[in-house]
Length: 96
Image (cartoon, rainbow, N blue to C red; front, top):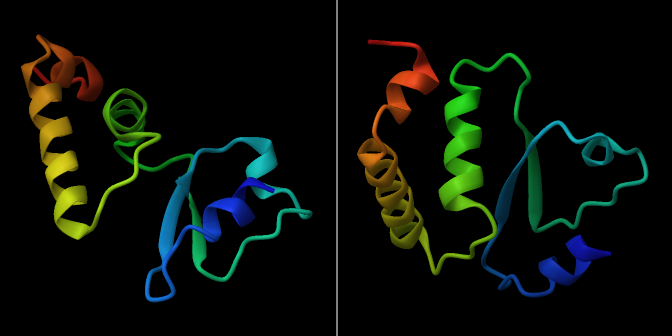
């Protein structure tokens, strides 16, 4: 299972949190989650969900970071890239 293989790469003093979209297999009763991983579903009616998914899909998904500072830097870089896309923020949040 992919979660088991991923869990084996996590150091003993680390714990990983993963945010999941609403894919049906993410909530399967057969899914076994290793103790060093916590899964957190993204709520369906969460305000700002479209912006979060856009940032995740375009700038943040499928990446590993060396630590907290690297995660913050990646999030800031993603936000800066999003700001630079003409009209993107206004189209995502429906604000003038």
